[in-house]
Amino acid sequence: MKIAVRPVAGKADFKAFVDSAYQLNANDPHWVPPLRSDVAELLTPGKNPFYEHATVQLFVAWRGEQPVGRISAHIDHLALEQPPEQGMGPGTGNWGLFEAADEDVAAALMQAAEQWLRKQGMTRALGPLSLSIWDEPGLLTKGHDHSPMIMMGHHNPAYQQWIEALGHQEAKKLHTFIVPVKGGFPPIIDRIVKSGMKNGRIVIRPIDMSRYEEEAATILSLLNEAWSANWGFVPLTDSEVQYVKKKLKPAIIPEVNLIAEYDGEPAAFMLALPDINEVLKTSGGSLLPFNWAKLLYGLWKKHWSGYRVPLMGVAQKHQNSRLASQLAFMMIETIRERGVNNYGADRAEVGWILEDNQGMNAIADAINGEINRTYSIFEKAL
Image 1: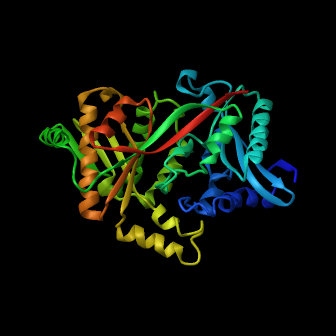
Image 2: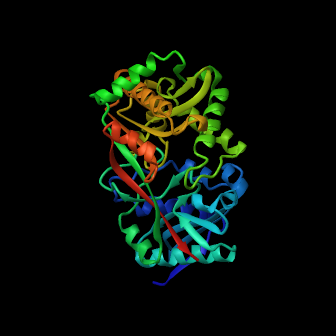
Image 3: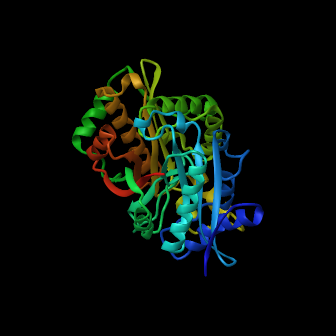
């Protein structure tokens, strides 16, 4: 049958857009179905503050009455204001949320997204970003043999070849590292950590949940500052800061979410989140009828085998210094020790980390981290 790609218009199309991911990945044992409610929230203006500075168009591919794929085409107007040498900049539009039943469907979807971006005046397509750089960036190109941790995507391994055949070239790689946690870190890391613990100017402390709003604001302010020179950076708006604070709060275990202070001022932070994918993997994308109880029980008992460190940042005035790496190692060791001894962790993942972020890659290497997943972001001139 002929493939028809149509923009989403109305509730039935929206449902087809959401459901197609569950249908097309149903036979992949490593795909983790996100909660449908979370997907709907991500895609709904008024609920997701990304829409306050973005223009988004969703497309569904059809064969007859059967949905066989989907894609988003979108423009982040804050990204257009960023320096081109940092990956975004004027003329750069994005695509994401890509799923396709076969290569012909992939070509039809990409053609529709590219055409829409051209009509919006874009000269370059960069993706996949689903939807912003802060959500799920990149296409999985290494690590298809195991399930992702919290807040990371998983994709059909055929997608890379299909996308590259359409003229999209790799612009940047993002890595995640699996880190051994039970046996401790190499002796040199122990020496660095112990030296820092003796330094009265350094304090490593857990997030104070009785002051959560203030603490979260401090962390997200540090995040915006610390990442401002990174490739792909787009600043979080005040609305997004409020949104992220609310979304993260249920998953925060204070003892493994840390703020580092130097001379009494916040100097760095590191977040570690329990891998709720352990529950979501068997949920089918729904908390009904009893999956909500499993999820809440998991959060309540505070016992997870896997943790992910998705974010860390160091204040700019301390970056590229010995203090920066020392604070990082101190927080990592604190999280490792508490995660293992207090919460039963037996594995941890750090990332994503840009392939050319020499400092963070060196830290991952020093704690015996090994790349377990790679995500690629592609670009194409329009």
